[in-house]
Image: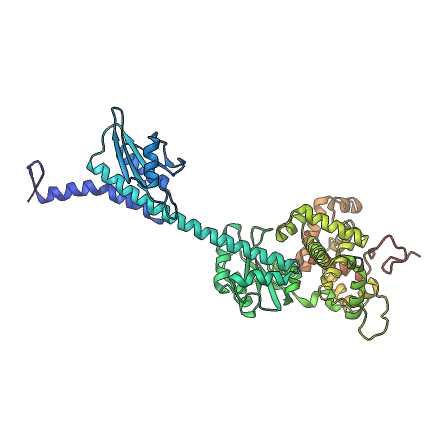
Length: 514
């Protein structure tokens, strides 16, 4: 038997029941420490409901963090937040006030938990307030830890993006310097493969974390700044590439495209290859594809002739300072591969900057990027230029003949590739080949194509879209896939070769009019 303070007696069963009732609030308070319930605003609401009171939580500056604002003496508030006192109580005719100091991690000043109600707080209510203050302190500490962790993760993510952007403009030296401090050895390589993984936008953070785990942070994993569904990975080793490819099979709605092995200076080109391969992956049962070098027309051309033609085509840019030239070339490569908006996001600059740089290249090359054939040929020159060492000619000491674009396209390997590629369209009774040829000549404009062919613009778009799985290339968005199809049309003579320098009538690539 146990005795009360007033001398009355109670049985053991009565004592247990009463204690359980007195302590039932503790279980409700503990619920707020569960992962799904960690919110100081919910704790403040629970305390207000439990005590039938008004509750507020304010920081040292008076900012309301939770609950309803309660007026209190400024000097008393200052004493609490600065640590002169730990708690205070005040009773008046209309309200009773209880104030408790709540420590904040890594903060010189504290918060104040205030409870106000018309009746005084008894022992049970005071105990609830004290324990609630302890729970709030734990939640603030956990929130601070989570916030710090989030900041570190965001900082690491921003650094990885900065490294990628440096690689995109061929600044491999700076990229290695940035990476060395946090990820030693990450870019201690001359070559790498670029992979682009696609998933649902809401699943991207999960995919990023899985990529980081699988590669043991030995690959550069970046959230694509241009496409919310994409993750870009620069993988120096073969093992990382094989590991990443397995992700497409393990997760629904996940696809992966990979580039061929390229030098780090060619990261921008490798990125374009990976995006092209990603388009093919959508038609593959394993949802994975690697860029096929055998379909790359540049590989089928005479190397010496292509080298001489590329150096000559881009010679107007040689007057620029090295860093300016590299910046313009890298920006134009991405601008031709993607939209100006997407290129700007990848490079971390404004779209107006991208357009201004491309317009400067247009002016120097004295050409017009609104022409798809010009874009395709310039894209060919820019991508091959990365491999040039600043010399021209065949390397034999003899004066090499001036190669023309027509000469590059006339080789038997290029001819065979172009004819076989376009012949895939011949089986369709809708004459997709004619529609595609006309659409390219019209600058990819469906309305102009429809006027020329006498059909509806939507029909034009359907024809072009139908050609994509047949050719295994994306056509409605500018990029390597489309430019290869344009080059195939140029090779078989179904499109007029572009005039790269219209200001010079004797330009070697200018069409000859009989």
